[in-house]
Image 1 (cartoon, helix red, strand yellow):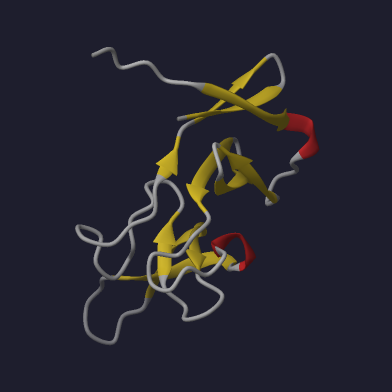
Image 2 (cartoon, rainbow, N blue to C red; image 1 turned 180 degrees about the horizontal axis):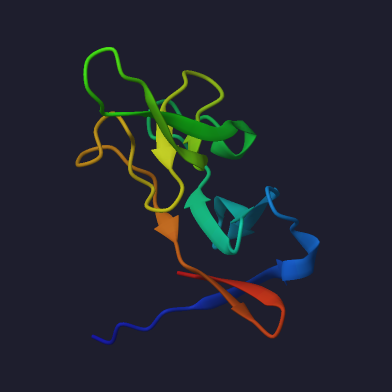
Amino acid sequence: MGDSKKLHPVGEASDLPDGGRKQVTIEGRAICLFHIGEEYYAVRSTCPHQGADLCGGTLGGSMLPSRPQEYVYGLDRHVLRCPWHGWEFDIRTGRSLFDPDRMRVRAYPVRVQDGRLFLES
């Protein structure tokens, strides 16, 4: 069996400003596409907890492991919070911050070719 990947056009890179997001449907699946800095990310837009639309969630950062009485904030603009119950996912990998080995949403590679965005599935 070959490992063939499909490229799906999802729009012009110039139409998605830095910090922007948009939801697309690929093969019947809702996927949320993000533009953060120089990078583009895409994750399945369905929360594995109870099915909320993740694209409607907030994007921010999170507290990172640190010493007692030390507060370290990180992952700025890379943590997607579910709008229903606040579950957090890293948009770069799709892994949850709470249980990264067991809970995740699918992350999709995004390519930019000739100014157009393509999602790989």
